[in-house]
Image 1 (cartoon, rainbow, N blue to C red):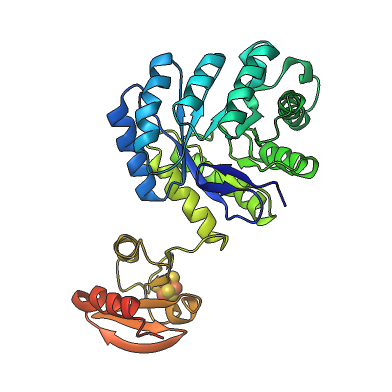
Image 2 (tube, rainbow, N blue to C red; image 1 turned 60 degrees about the horizontal axis):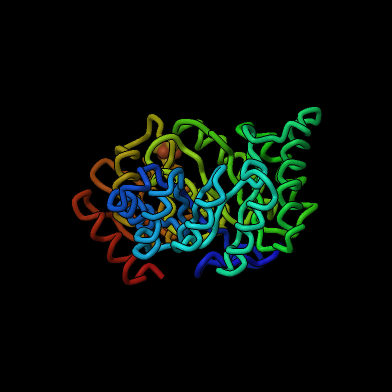
Amino acid sequence: MKKEINIGNVKIGGKNPIVIQSMTNTNTENIEETLSQINRLYKAGCELVRVSIPTFEAAIALKNITKKSPIPVIADIHYDYKLAIESIKNGAKKIRINPGNIGNKEKVKEIVKVAKEYNIPIRVGANSGSISNEFAHLSKVDALCESALKEVKILESLGFYNIVISVKSSDVKETIQAYEKIYNITEYPLHLGVTEAGTYEWALIKSSIALGYLLYNGIGDTIRISIAGDPVNEVIVAKKILISLNLRKGPQIIACPTCARTNIDVENWANILEQRFSNKNIKIAVLGCVVNGIGEGKDADIGIAGIPNGFILFKDGKIIGQFKSEEIIDVLEKYINTGEEK
Ligand code: SF4
């Protein structure tokens, strides 16, 4: 079990559930746009949000952003220690820095002093693009871990232990191996992610394999799915990974792949039900026919199977009734909302 770390009112590590985080891609200086994106992320289920602080103006804007954000804000800083200090003073509940690129130790010491004063954690770590030159002769996995540990040691040498670590690669196997290795040698909570995972499908596949494997094995305390594009997708994918591993409750739609027996447009109905019941902790099956469908959907809380003129509603493999297409949503809603299916 890893050390418990507080990020505002959110706890990671210890026995706490895995926390979902994402990152804005608006101009941080544009407070309105950034807050609007943070609110969209929050509504999708995001629990921590990171914003880049590339300029002093962005660090100033952070004051309004942190004040109005519904979730704790993490400031992502490179190179300039003054931006880190300003961000902490302006309400960042955690900062992500790379002590190696902050410059001399005195500057890191200044950041640590303020982080201690405000009692906020610092995430350090390495990704494929930030491996320290001195570890270039090592395997990529060892170099990622050694680079991260070097940063941890800098903070520890300053008496700072409020730390979160990441070791991200854009390669699935390297990500798995690096996190397995670092997990076994540190007590600090781990921020999991595949870095530069790519566009939607690649990011989805790489993240599901790497993070799925790690989380299944009990490794990881907070996750960020890196996807090029709208960050809301990162949160939706993160939620689905956690629900799939039973690490979080939430809606889950089981749908058959369809075949020549299909009586309904399974994909369309699955999408309709997914949207309609997106805020329910329920597993719903949508199946194209009754031949295998009811058996295949046995694991769901409730399900529907297509017949030529409507649907069969079933639960625990038993048929409850037959309904027309126009009435099936209302029937499902009634059963799900009132628990009449129980
Ligand atoms: S549930 Fe029916 S329609 Fe769907 S794949 Fe199975 S047999 Fe085919």
